[in-house]
Length: 422
Image 1: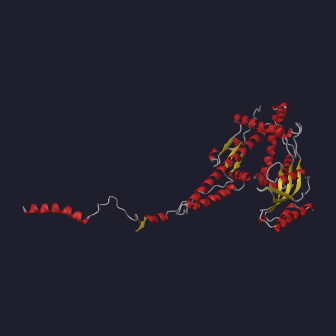
Image 2: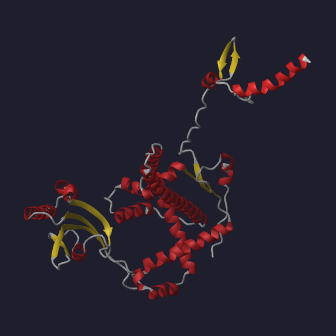
Image 3: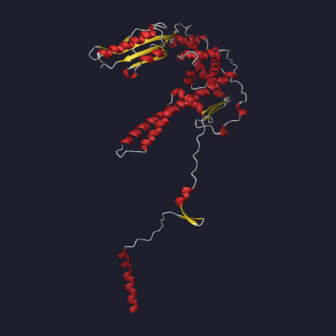
């Protein structure tokens, strides 16, 4: 009986003792600060093992001069060449985008507690996204132009078109005149087109091949009556006004200048006029008298039509009346204020350096422009026929063509018959 009482007390006491001590339940998973591993007689932690593990080397960026982004027959375009063509189209925007992306990433990494920095960074990110989309679009257009140019040039060679001796030099000289470069300024043309000297000569040669093929197509399939009908429908489209190349100096006024400052501004413009009349080089004159901070700027403008906007009306009107080599008086560009009075907002001096005469007053004189328009239509027709024939090998990948997809040299150089153009 005494033993049974002792056993009953133990049953009642043990649960109460556990509740009094509030003991935590046993852990299901045992946590340790670091896993211990025995190495060569000593115990190493997992952190030590991770630090001893070699860090993998980053994947090297491939040389853009070795990455092919397009292949047309036996011609290839590298990433570096496409970047140069793109830079010629839109300037150094791609490099600027990379710099601004790095700056925006830094802003996002240091967000201010008030959230203002975040708002600024998000606005900047949206702007960069739009810039990135524009670059992709221009990149695609540059690639498409290269593909079409190579395809048409190859087809012209298959059609038996031949470029006359001396034609390349004549075309380069024409490009210099149209772009307003000095004679022999090949480097300026190279920068304009984003090409090396050899690439530019090849491009001009191929352009002449293409023109020859399209001219032949126009002669065979576009009758004279169709050209005359196009002229009579819209004669204004085929009239080219004269183009002027001028040296232009301007002095801008804000309206709060004193009478003395205004006299000085006009005096500087008059000094420029006298120096230009003496025959001094415009670049030297402008370098001497330009004061950008004071609104005094001189520059040489390439060939342009005086009907185009950009210069004040009085300046464009005066240029249209001038002869090659002449210098204008000091011209005052005025605006009418709200009270009806006139205010001189700028002074201008121009010298006409060269003039390309207008053309296209009659059907006969408009023939070059009419044939150029016909060549443009023929180009689209011929490209469609070439693509339908599927005799030209074309491979593109802006990310880089995988080596396994690049055809063997023998396959690329395999001769193909000309397309039956019609």
